[in-house]
Length: 298
Image (cartoon, rainbow, N blue to C red; front, side, top):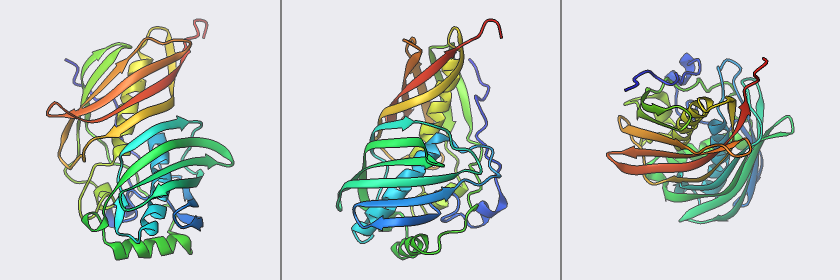
């Protein structure tokens, strides 16, 4: 049995995020520059230059958060959307520390039950990520956060904007590989922290492990598996589809994460991603990866 960690998920934690985590430790909208209630919004987020990296899953989170602000405002902050379904997320480019994301969302439907939206992010006019046909169920906002604090935050974002550089990164997540078949499958455990700064942002009244952190973990494991495939030198994500969150993940919960990688066809490999707790499926997705062959003469 393999027990070594696949990776260390550490982004150069800064003291500021831990000292004032609400709206700092897991908030990725600095300013909203266009806002049509219930219909569309545009905003920005400056990725702090001190970070080691800014994963694509966090770019998707930034787009989703912009949609959440538009949705909460639309229904008078009676509810807030939570992760539910995402038909497709397309990975079109890379966002790096020091870049500024331009975010945009279009709401196709929004009421007290759910919000449906599409969105995208770009850097210097170049597309980075696109979210297609996302659906977020609405739950009572008072279960998760203070509605007054959220209204005040939205006013700040629509006005002078939040202080840039406040995000301090994500602490190391304890992921350990328990089974591996090179280039084909991988199993690992993820122990959700009992406490972490991002819980104060996600959420103050009901800590929930962010779905985008789970997705990023599963994608990293899939990339690690794909790199072990015969003749594969490099793997990069193309798109993730059929993302479904079936239940909340709470502090101290242990997850069994699985990756099943099918043989590549025309340079593209497809992986089934899953996360279970006590043999109960809590999340699933499908990932497509582009594989680049090794250069025998390099």
